[in-house]
Length: 396
Image (cartoon, rainbow, N blue to C red):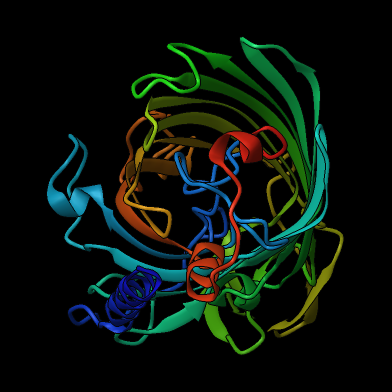
């Protein structure tokens, strides 16, 4: 029996590896994203939302690095499929991301836990869009490292209330867009509350429980300039008065120095192995102020001239984020999520307010998750906890 089990796990692992290494259709050249756009692969909170430990219905292992997940994500823009009433782009976008979300628990008690976590990935754009410069180009995502702390300060037979924090939260500009635009390091923190309420009963097959999560976070971005720049770019541009200047600036907007996020999410356990998650967030940002008290030289025959600009520029922006997804646990090793996400600037290029639920930036996505601790435990014959006993001390 053990030999059959191990053979089945090996076969599933080899199948997943073959799928990960496959290469979809061709893609062509493109250009960098805007300064306000999220970096490629930024959908890191979709597959593992705040307040959720592992896949629903899975018996966790006793390894210190349990709930470590290898994921294979596919995202396709909605307007590529003709969804929505806005202008339908002829610039289709299909991105494939392969990533790892490791966890290592330093401490786990009955009511609290402390762990180290991360999110590392590589992404490729496989269509003829403007997000890359070479066909099928691969790039790293922005890597994340953070500490996670949880504490259950209230627990009854009917519900559980838990405090969850991510502190500190470090974002490394490892993606091509972030690195090329002058970003150095993002530092932040997150705090959230999770309320887990019983519906039909913890052991019920359908609608056992529902979770409500609220969160708030803050981040500070260190950069080597106030605006997005690329030292290898020397473009001749025209200033507002028609004069030619040499510039390495990528866009007219400055980078966001301070950023915040406020969100709410519901996690309805439709079945012991089916989770429906819906979340809504607002992400305001305050940009670096532009200093106009500088001299620009070598652009006029008489020497230098004072820089000009708007006397009171707008330095605040906002991004809205909405997503809904279904996570299906196939077995203790594999799970699939299918969802829809809209992460976009609150104001469009035309100055009009965009819908929270749809914009030209909206995407459909599908993600395959592989529990590496489950794979290791199955191959090595490691011990597992029961789902009930494990859930009593880990739910973040």
